[in-house]
Image 1 (tube, helix red, strand yellow):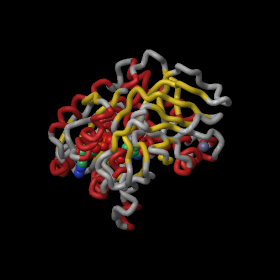
Image 2 (cartoon, protein in one colour):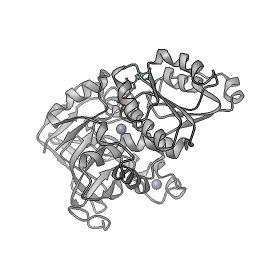
Image 3 (tube, helix red, strand yellow):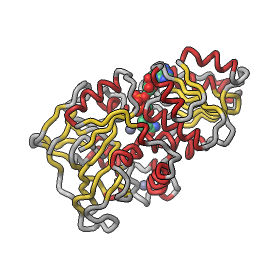
Image 4 (cartoon, helix red, strand yellow):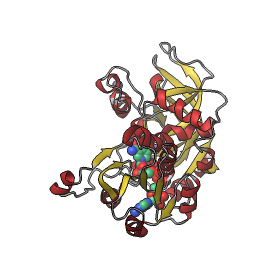
Length: 360
Ligand SMILES: NC(=O)c1ccc[n+]([C@@H]2O[C@H](COP(=O)([O-])OP(=O)(O)OC[C@H]3O[C@@H](n4cnc5c(N)ncnc54)[C@H](O)[C@@H]3O)[C@@H](O)[C@H]2O)c1
Ligand SMILES: [Zn+2]
Ligand SMILES: [Zn+2]
């Protein structure tokens, strides 16, 4: 089959090949024919070494498709089912799963680092984050997919698998934004726009979107931002909009020390700071020992939007069906796998794209 292969960490291009295969479907696994996948910044972060990944490998982790084969012990899927993938398949029995925090389950994620599920030119190759949706087919544990209705377009379903779950989930599950509150969102990519939509759904009274790419400001307003500015303009709004008190909630959706620091500085005393952006392991953010207690702020990390995928994927798709969550509008461009390197370049260069979707 066709797939885009990352040969080594540090490569800026993926190699398009048509001789890629998967491993056989194990008893507790399923084979999915990928029908749509988004391109997320975390794919670029795998290529440049910001986030852990193994090479050779197949990137892509925001996908949806059709079940085409099931293992002997799988009873929750049938061939022909439509499904959304997840890069954190919950094992169901570990302390995190039992404790109601299945997005922190590491059982399948660790296994994915040890068990390559692709074969490229006769050699084993890893699926990024246990997935690998830049391939026409992939094999995942049955827990790595959630069944959806056949009436939901695959491109809409794909968005939910990472960006929308992460962004809306950071608002609803992690921060628990309350009606009437004020929200600052740093970064207006696919995940940041999802944070803006989550804040709008939560009834936030003021949503200030920040992005250096001015063309994204109008898009941010379309999705619910009440104000949209460049990073340089934040200080002015801090004064004029919040009376120099700061915002109730501040989200970093970039993952760089300056934006994390800005989220902290711009949250009000007693406010909530949420780090959604995924930064490098060696990038440090400085806080004084005094400010951490004195301002009584909540500094929260948000991994995968605190997702309980079996609860939250259907919830997000119901919101879309009800016209309350705009997913169609997040698709800037539909492309074929052959154009994947252009799409990665556009995202890396900060072009005016929210989500580019590969359809198969
Ligand atoms: N927490 C998680 O589990 C999780 C899941 C998915 C993605 N992520 C991370 O979320 C981040 C966003 O992902 P994305 O796909 O939306 O990326 P993206 O590239 O589409 O968007 C990032 C946006 O940040 C903007 N930006 C750059 N510098 C800025 C600054 N100084 N101030 C404000 N905005 C700035 C860019 O112009 C761009 O619009 C990435 O770090 C990604 O790896 C985290
Ligand atoms: Zn992602
Ligand atoms: Zn678990």
